[in-house]
Image (tube, rainbow, N blue to C red):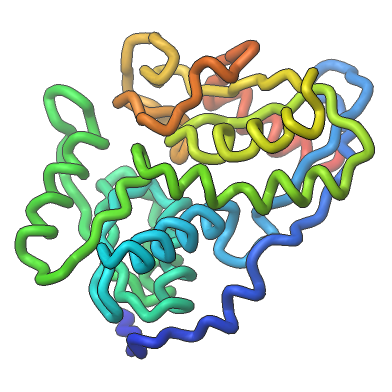
Length: 266
């Protein structure tokens, strides 16, 4: 078990590490030939892509007085937001309690615990809403037991989307022109937060959503999903449905194959 000792003041100097991630030109066939595209390498940023949203949500809650200095933060996660919240908690001085489920990969469990978070795992999905509904039920139990605890509610918190304004600004600076933006969709935060500012910059920009097979976000029936951090068995309020020009569903086999092709460079 890993224990982190946090100061209520945190270490705000860490916030200076957020963002400024590079772009890479991708030309690998995936699996068909294509003219190439730019990929924003958010995984290279401290705390991962969702650190932008995590910091935004905690700062917003502190400014409104909803989150007191040193108070615990409790959130449901399939892993990626948890990494971002771990970073935000260290920077702002908040212990982080994450509710996951037993399908969370062992490597992600170790990573989250190494960052000092408390990890709670539910052991069975809810009859309606699956793992996400089960995690949210445990989350509400924890909120009732932890004095002063704050729930960011990544699914419906507008500060989630607002946190990606910096990502949009970086893309507008790094690219001379942008015709098509492709975003994976989970909570809907980053696609909603990026497309608005970019369409003000490039009004003709098309937004393409990528969802997981088995996800209910865009009207398909919810089914068990192998991929984590993509798709949802509930309908997050942050999804900007009207902003999408197209939506495509991706299965785990083709996603894993594309990842391996990218890693191998062929």
